[in-house]
Image 1: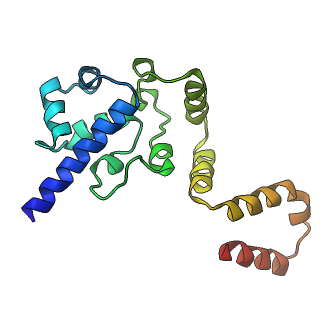
Image 2 (image 1 turned 90 degrees about the vertical axis):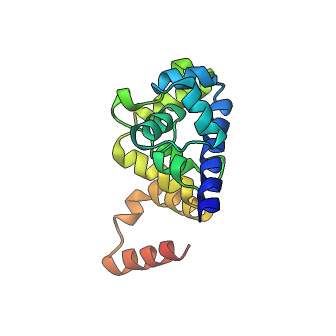
Length: 167
């Protein structure tokens, strides 16, 4: 069990290091942004220590992912889109400090647009990111045919829902 636990710590540290490098953030910069000493962050990335509590939360926020993703020893790298969308917060103090990270103008515009989404729009986006192409096409078709759907009776709507659920 100890060996498994150690392996998970290395995986967590590697995820943090990979995310940090992907964002073009120096280890010292991430340490400063998260109020962690550079040596402590180095030990976390090396798998010697495991980030806990607020440290894990601050690291996740700065890297733009959920703390669940950071701490989940079985989570794949790179993070799934949902791990990124779920991290979007209405509180600007909890958002990654993108001015310290190297991101393109188009990435910055996307990030700003994501931050402006309502909670319902975020849920819709997360659903779309998890859905396959058939479901997305069906939803787009349904949205484009809203006036047609409003003319359906309860039986037809039920059939439509059953067909949608099967996809």
